[in-house]
Image 1 (cartoon, rainbow, N blue to C red):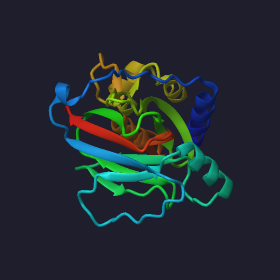
Image 2 (spheres, rainbow, N blue to C red):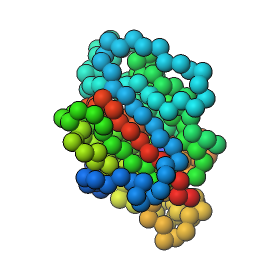
Image 3 (cartoon, one colour):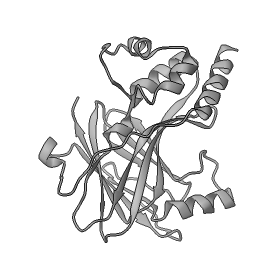
Image 4 (cartoon, rainbow, N blue to C red):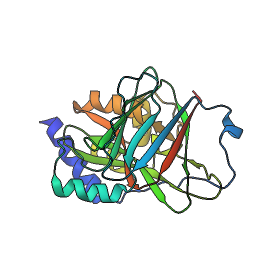
Length: 248
């Protein structure tokens, strides 16, 4: 009964609360390798037309490429109209999990509306850039998702990239963290303060943000429900590159 009540309260509070998207920083001629050195992992997200029917290999253990709709908004409308996919949410999305090493577990969004990325252990600075012909724009939103209830719970902000004459890297590290301003609906539902949540997670009292995968592990134990982290794609580009730099 307590688990059901918590889920209901959490959902009602989140729906009633306004979601705060934390802006990310960026600027031209700002290759993150200058700040962090060589990347730990590089991911290429390639945009294709909606009728693309390629068959990417699922056998490679060092795959670093995903295939997604070039126009995610059109794909979203089509998938909602046809209702062909079993996995919720139907939005074009990338499930992101954390394991012992990096791997693209599912590179093809065209067969079921989703891809799957596993990142390595530790914490990372993460940067996004749109490459190719100028003009197109894509937004990647980070979300905490309640798998058990099939509901979006909390936005962790977003990062927007556009094709420009020169690569314009954007920091997307913030979409991997929950900060105090974003945590309000969750704290209200749990009946906790930020300080109490930090203590429960064994974080130092001065911490200003929480790594999303630490939060998911704790939430699943505390509530008995399954939670996940995902990127929701809006708009689209021919080529989005993502670089991960291990920092902890």
